Amino acid sequence: MGGRDRRNQQLQYEGYLRRQETNEAIQQLSQNGTSIRQIVRQTGYSRKLVRDVLRGQRLDVFRTRPSSLDAWLPWMNDRWEAGARNASALWREMRNEGFVGQRGIVSQWAQRRRLAEKANQSGLARTPSARVLARLMTSARDGLARSEAILVAVIEDHVPDLVAARQAISEFQSMIRSKSAAKLSDWLDSARGGLVSSFVNGVERDLAAVRNAMVSQWSNGQTEGQITRLKLIKRQMYGRAKLDLLEARLVGAN
Image 1 (cartoon, rainbow, N blue to C red):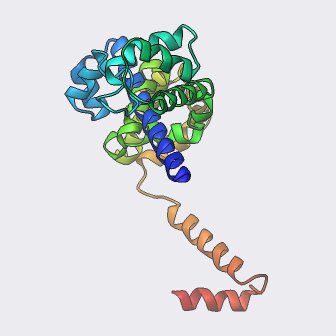
Image 2 (tube, rainbow, N blue to C red; image 1 turned 180 degrees about the vertical axis):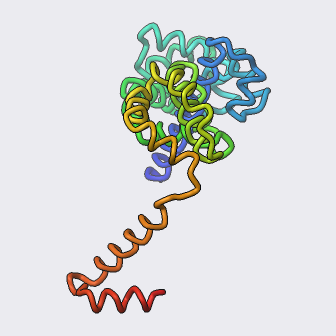
């Protein structure tokens, strides 16, 4: 039973972290001036949940028995912030004030509070890597999970330069797909001072080739693909890729 109890506590704690991150993200969006309607649209959460968070009705997100600790949570939070960190002493105080619950319930609550504080102190360890952030910022919003959409929304509010860089890359890709270079000069002027300035410099150094690549119907994609295929077959033969055998493999594959 001890192992099962620890597993249940771990699941409760992990759920607490998820709810806590959701609350903080919603509160941050609201502090930045985002309306409730926009928060609902950006995060995918219901209007009721967003309102509950902004009204302070999800301050303590630990799963506790409604009949035991709910009415005492504000008082317990105040005592905890005042330095009363001993669960047994806290329980005795509550008993003197009329609390009828068992000592173990208060001990579990105190343990979760310590875990939460430890998690807040090591919050940077949960920061996504640069590769993950790049994927999230360049992915379509419809393809993101709710937690990912919340993270992207917070990044957009805090790092507007990153939003401008994503927009610049999207516009450049659009020019390539549409085979049009009419807006290339305007794009270079607008993107030059942003986070993609090094990419802009590279485009300008070979501007003629980039422009031709955008508008031309010809592409070396087939050539590069055949070279890649040839290298793959050669590697599969482990050094036995003499010209006659390699030719037989290629012809046979065709």
